Image (cartoon, rainbow, N blue to C red; front, top):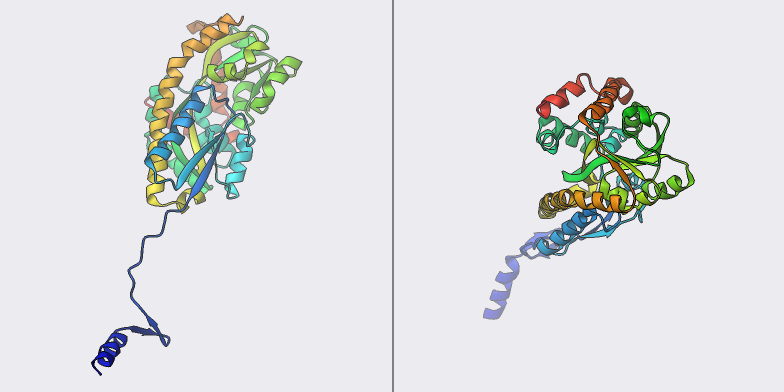
Length: 340
């Protein structure tokens, strides 16, 4: 009889829901969503930027709980930047490096100005701009288009011009077909200098130079050398027409699906790897220049007077705001934001 009373009391303590007994069991935290981020890029693994990407992957592996993994796909294994961005907008777990010129083509028009020729005089102006309200507005606008910036503090390098014929002043570019990445900003940026900009995937540049389809290409020294372009083009002008910081980007929907801890891990590790990359980039410049000279490249370090011929002609680019869809007064606002 006593046993029956105990059992009856126990059953009476159950919560009755829809005629079924439900025990109150403490809920356990859901395990973190597992995700493998496919980091695709055009560069070879010998370049400093690729070593920076490896550092990011390593930091995520070391500091995380294993639920997030970054796998590197160099040498355009996953396709071009444009195809990767298109894929992530369709839900792919791709990550890539991209720049303001590409984001302009994806609807954030004002972002394209950061790739304007001779906009920055030094790297400090780049970092100051990134801390500004203007830059934060661009990040938010990009998220509204479905893309999330994971890091911006990455030096890709000062972009120089490698050609099959000597270039010393801007007039020497007249009529020369110069390969640029396939976006409107960089195309017009070289066209205003008098060249004929030719959009092309980086992996196709070597054979195009070899065949005479193009007369030159522009990129940082690490990328020019990493693609062995010095074998087929023997004249380099250190014009530094763009101080190219780059960003790491993924789908905003993908980023928002991650836990807060996963998000913070990706962002903090990306920033730290960016600092590591920048140290590598700046330390490697002299070495790449020496290698190019050793392999028969004639290097021209322009005088201030020669550079002025480029800067003066480049000013026409900033009068193209209507063609780019820029907001009114953008050039002056950006200059003010970076302290000019």
